[in-house]
Image (cartoon, rainbow, N blue to C red):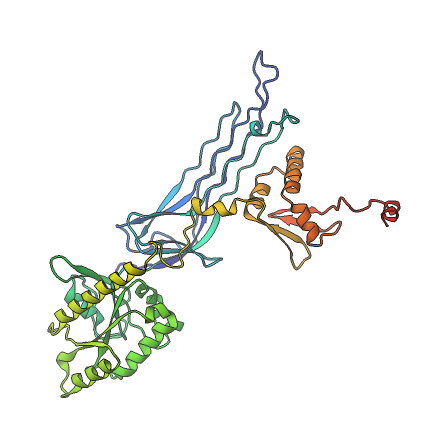
Length: 451
């Protein structure tokens, strides 16, 4: 039996950029060749790409750490380091990727072909050739490579189906799917026969078809984790029309109207958008009903709720064709409604994290200062933290340059505005230093003079 894996958490670590080189030209007859350190190479990035040959996320082991290559270090003679190799991971169409920490949707892979960035490699550090100035002719420092992005992600596969079959376990969903398509789901007379979602292509006529999904039946409390339905509710989220099967044969011993109420309540608890999808009622197993007037009674009840109702038998095929044609027409209506209101091809709520989308974070003047519970003044800002990460803190000249940059960016002014006092600990990324107030008096005599 094939294993269906539709949700997994993994960790992506993009490659760090290579370090810039600190070298000087040394050649005969060139006594003052000057700095010629090359730049580091860019670290490898992670991409995910849709594949038509995959139907599960089985290839991704839960908790696995995927690492891309680091960029090569720069060399002398202005030679740049080699870029780290990018990694492209194949996923099924319909995979949605979320950042575990923030809950943000990184990418929704609903097309083929489609490729998205999930973790960008770090930039290579600049060699010392870039830091020559009128007052600094021989810089003896270079930038370190930028760390690659690290991201723990949740990968969820949501089936791409036009029509979803809805109903309690063992109401005939799998039988209907096998009747109207070439799908061969397992069918038996017990609850939760369907343990994995099944897809089938339903042929309407020579020019039209649609995809139908049969997911495991829901029970009361499914939206809170009861039964196995919660694992598969998400597979209905991409559908545009629902066929709600209501078993009126009496075989299950349940009240069909109560079943209908419970299912719709579970949909509303899970997602208001899912509950608002158009539903078509299919009164199933009419071929074994013996009590006269049963079909008419239930049909009248649901029609009184404004629903379109089709009494059907998946075994004999009774009324199946009118049901399929009606569902096809409903799908065409939803397509027209969507095209009239859609403003872009990006699904609602999706934020694609790509290199183009990251430019707003590249301004080092955009940072904030907050005091944590331990009293440490924490300076945070993506571009500013990148500057810290790419500074060689063991190199005195590089540290002096960093201090000048922090001054120009207004970091010390903002620290003073936040109430920083002499000796307070300041942290930027993983670097800590003591705050020094240049305006503060150094001796008691100076303090008296200031007063």
